[in-house]
Length: 370
Image (cartoon, rainbow, N blue to C red; front, side, top):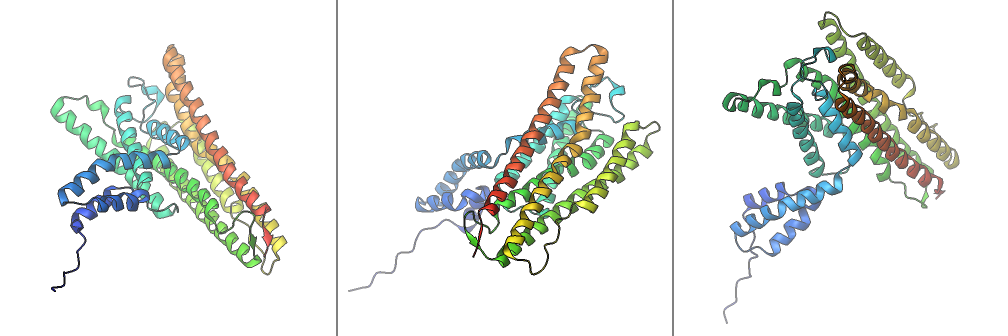
């Protein structure tokens, strides 16, 4: 009796399988691709089903990964730094050219869409400096793409050139919005890592393991401080260059440059996590950890407001003050609503950040020595 050859499992071609895998968000990739493999009949059927499922998978992952206060804060930051609150015919409200608000909105929405997709397609929950760099590169690329599309419409569809960013506005966006976004996203991400440390609530832990966990906390604080200092130096240097460029720079500019220098000095002097003494016992190590964790929470609560203060004042000077001066009640109300919403979203981010620290403190309080 002739032996039958073993049945070879049908599988999609490697290139098609790779394409489908790349297009599915990493968090859902294995489950979705596994189902597609079970239903595989032909390369065309596999690819078609993958493309049909992909939008639903992306939307589902966007909903899971979206942080509404962060999303809204980023939207206001992008729109404001792109000049969206500046009235077209009011040269007194800003010393830097601004596009029409529609052009600023298109660029801001495009950049926000890029950030949303970045969050949906992230391969790991761990936040790194490299990931933060890719975030701002994504924003810069999306804004550039929006400008290329608008420039094409200006050329072929007689679109008003005022929809486009000027080089000075694009430069201001690069030195103001991009560092701010980098700090905002990276620091919140580093705080998120508090929940994924090796300490479990109500569990036993050795003194050595507790010290090791604290070393990880020290490292995250060190990275965060470097990010703050680097972003602050970029703002100081480029802000000073802007003040030197204009004949009659606004006095508030000097206040911000000086203020950022003071904040940088404050972070360098006070921002580091205090070193845990060598050979310390479990109870002392636990007490040190809890005190320093709470100090770091309080230390940087103020920083968000300071880092976003230029945006608050920018909206006030570009939308609220000119509208009050010219008797435009609707525009003044729009600017006031934007300021109120921004303050609300920052307060929500601070509240969420405080909850993460409190959860970590509660976990530490429940620890027992093993």
